[in-house]
Amino acid sequence: MKKILMLYFSHESNTFTPLTTRLSDYVVKEADDMLPLVQKAADVLRAAGYAVVPSIYAAAGPSGVNQREVYEYVAQKVSQTIDAHPEIAGVWMHLHGAIYVEEIGHA
Image (cartoon, rainbow, N blue to C red):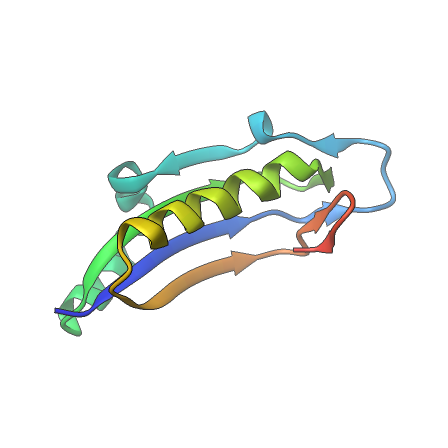
């Protein structure tokens, strides 16, 4: 059975505020703990014959630019999941917002 990695990353970054968005500002769920938050998408993928491989769910309300550690944490979790499942056939990625990161720019 083909495997699909699942990832959810959502934030509206505002570059006009001096505030920054920290990892602690996010709701973060990893691995199976994220599945209840993406259940409908997981059900669609399973119905299409795929096994789902949950990676990370990270969502925060609108705020300032993200600290670099936010992006690095999410990217590291996705990379670790891919390394643990090299047979992944594809990625279901829910990206929402204008995610902007210090020292990187648009995520």
